[in-house]
Length: 174
Ligand SMILES: CC(C)(COP(=O)(O)OP(=O)(O)OC[C@H]1O[C@@H](n2cnc3c(N)ncnc32)[C@H](O)[C@@H]1OP(=O)(O)O)[C@@H](O)C(=O)NCCC(=O)NCCS
Image (cartoon, rainbow, N blue to C red; front, top):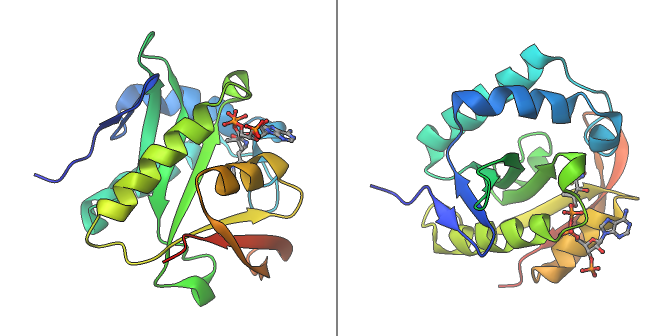
C-alpha cells in the first residue's frame, strides 16, 4: 500500500473526502483565491467538485496527487497541496508539478509552506516522480516565495497557453 497520508506539526495531508467538496467549492468561488489560477475565473460548485473527482482519479492512476489538507487541531479542511502532471503546459512534461491552494481564511499562517515542504519530500520519495517543477503566474508573490522557501530554483519564464498569462517556472535542483 502506497503512502497517501502525511502529517506535519499542524496539518494532516490526506486523500479527498465527500465533506471536502463544499468548503473547496467556497474557496474556488472566491475571486481572491482564483486571481492567479488560469484566467482568474471563479468556479461553480459543479466545476470544483469535478476537479476533486479528477484529483482522486489522478491519485489512482499515478500513485501521487494533490493532498487535501486539514488542521490537526480542528480537523478543518483548509485547501490542498501536492503533486500533479502539468498537462496545461505540455512543454514541461514529464516533470511533475508541485502546487497549492488554500482558503483565504487560512492564508498568512505558514500553512502553505508547511504543506508544500511535506508534499515535496513525498515527491522526492515517490519512484514515479523523476523531476519536480512549480509554476506560478507572474505577480503571485506568495507562491514564488513558497517555491524559494522549499528549495526550488528559478528555471525559466514561459506562458500558460491555456490563458496566455506569463508564468515563472521553478525547479528542484538535481
Ligand atoms: C499562495 C498561498 C497558498 C499562500 O498561502 P499562505 O498560507 O499565505 O503562505 P505562507 O503563510 O506559507 O507564506 C509563504 C510566504 O509568502 C509570503 N506572502 C504571503 N502572502 C504574500 C503576499 N500577498 N505578498 C507578499 N508575500 C506574501 C509570506 O510572508 C511567506 O514568506 P516569508 O516566510 O518569507 O514571510 C495562498 O495565498 C493561496 O492559496 N492563494 C490562492 C491560490 C494560489 O495562488 N495558488 C498557487 C497557484 S501557483
